[in-house]
Length: 263
Image 1 (cartoon, helix red, strand yellow):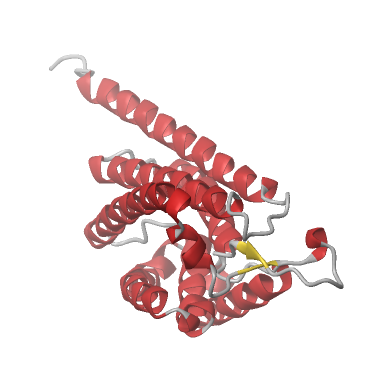
Image 2: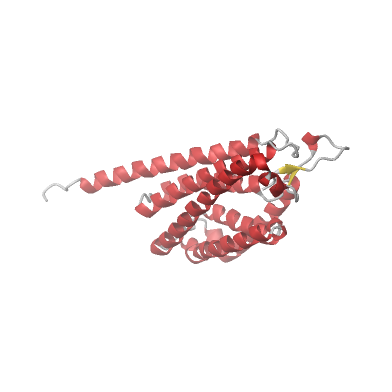
């Protein structure tokens, strides 16, 4: 996540991209900011817990239903981000690299499900007959795009990029529901844990960003509006998806309760 501004005398602050540097974590540990940064890290850790539960539900439900439980485009974007994190920006920070390797390993299971089951559910024949090539090229194209976008945007750790993926996933989940009409218990667990994981992450990141911004040693631009827009968008569409699942469950229960005439 790109948190600090590297400011040079030759360039105005508003024109310099956000970058992580060696002072980033020192600022978080400065006396007046330690408690706020700790709170942000605790909340962000909760996000990791919810996302872990979400991924477990995705994997279990995927093997049960023999289909990917995350939309294909979102899977490709997500695993591409993990590849970029492991071999790109995450390689500069050991802690992030190890965490990215763990998430990359989990993502590989979901990608396997996409390889194994996704083709059978693909309605476009041209893609169905070239499914393995399409997925393989999609992962490579995604990873390259993330690295280039992060460099172009000055987003040193792919923070805005990750929320773009999250928002795309939130929107595609709604479309996937109307394809499969799946309002099962595990589908609801996936929806709830994704929403809570993203919400905790958004709150934790916001606290950390503003903690650093409050430091007299940090030069901070007024350009985080797009990141907040993405956070709000994720929450809105996650809640909408949960609401759709709840209505789907109610309709399914009502249909099941109808007793056929003559029985």
